Length: 449
Ligand code: GLU
Image (cartoon, rainbow, N blue to C red; front, side, top):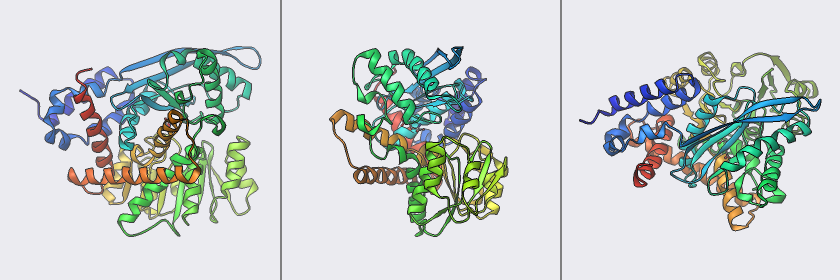
C-alpha cells in the first residue's frame, strides 16, 4: 500500500538524516523544501510512486579532489575541491563555485540542492549543481589566486563542458577567478569553449548585466511583491547586509528606484549611512581595493561603523540579507520586526534561519526565499549561455529588460503556486512547490535514471 504524503515525506527525511547525518546545512535546505510538499503529493500521487523524492535528495554525482598549489613563499598548500552535480533533468548542471574557508561538503550540497529548484523557477532549462573549495582568496596575492585556480581547474575540467556542467561565481569567485579558471580550461582542452563558464569578462563572451543580476533581480522581485499591494520602493529605507557583489548591486537598484539603502556589512561589523550608501565609494573600496567595510565609514562623512554588531538592529521597511547562510536568526528577525520591516527578500542563499522564517510568516510580513528572489543571477548566466551558443551579444538595456521580465515571471509563478496550494502570498510554499513540480515532471517523463 502506498504511504500517505505525510508519511512518505517523513520516510524520505529520515533516509536523508541517516545518510547525511553530518551535513546540517544540507538537511536544513532539504527540510525547507520537503515541509512544503504535502499538498503537491496529495495532488500528484504519481510522484510518490516514481520515487521522485528519494532520487531528488541524492546528487547524481559528487566529486571531491585535492588542490595542491605553491604560495608566494614556495611553500606547498593543499585545499579541498568540490563539485556536486545535483540534478540535470532540466538541462546541464548549473551553479556557482564558492571559495571560502567555511566550505565543506554539507555547504556545497545545500547550495546545489537549492540551485535545482531555483534554476527550475527561472524556466531557462538548466539543471542544478554547485562547487568550490575551502580556499579563501582574501589576503592572497593575484599570483597565488591564479596558481590555485589553475590547479583547481586541472582536476575539474574532466567533469565539465557546455552541455554537461557550467560553473560560475559565488562567494569568493568573481571576474578575476573566472578569468584564471577559463584560461586553464582553454589550455587543457585546446578549445575556446565559451559556454563552459559564465560570468566571463565582457570582451570574451561575458554577458552584460551578469555582474549586477543577482542584486538587481532581488530588488525587482521585491518590487513585484510591493506592486501587488499597490506600492513601490520609492522613499523607503532598506537595510542590506553584506558588501559583495550581491549587496552592492541590490543597493544600486534600490537607489535607482528611489529607495534609500542605509547599511552595508562584512564579517567585522556594519556601517550605517543615513543619507544612503554612496555606491561609487563602496565599489571603490570593495571591488577595486578589496578593502574592509570600516574603511567606508572613515572616508564618508556622517557614516559610522559598528564593530561586531547586528545590521538587523537598524530600522527599515525593506530588508535584503545579501551576505551568507544563516546570517539572520530569530533575534535578528525580532529586531527587524520591531523596526517596522514589511518585506524581507533574500539576496544570499538561505540567509534566514528556519526559526526566523517562521517568525516572519506568523507576523504576516512578506518574505521572499532566496531560491526565488536571488534567481536573477543564474537566470542571467543562462542568458550568457544563449548568447555564447548563438555567438551573439546583447546590449545592457535589452539584457536588463530580459532579467526584469524573468523576475516578474518567477514572482508570478511563486504567487500562483502559493494560491493553488492554499496559502496565497506564502512565497516559501510558492517557490518550493513551483520549482519542485517542474523538476518532478521532467524526472517522471525521463524514466528511472
Ligand atoms: N552563485 C549564483 C547562485 O547562487 C549564480 C550561479 C550561476 O550563475 O551559475 O545562484
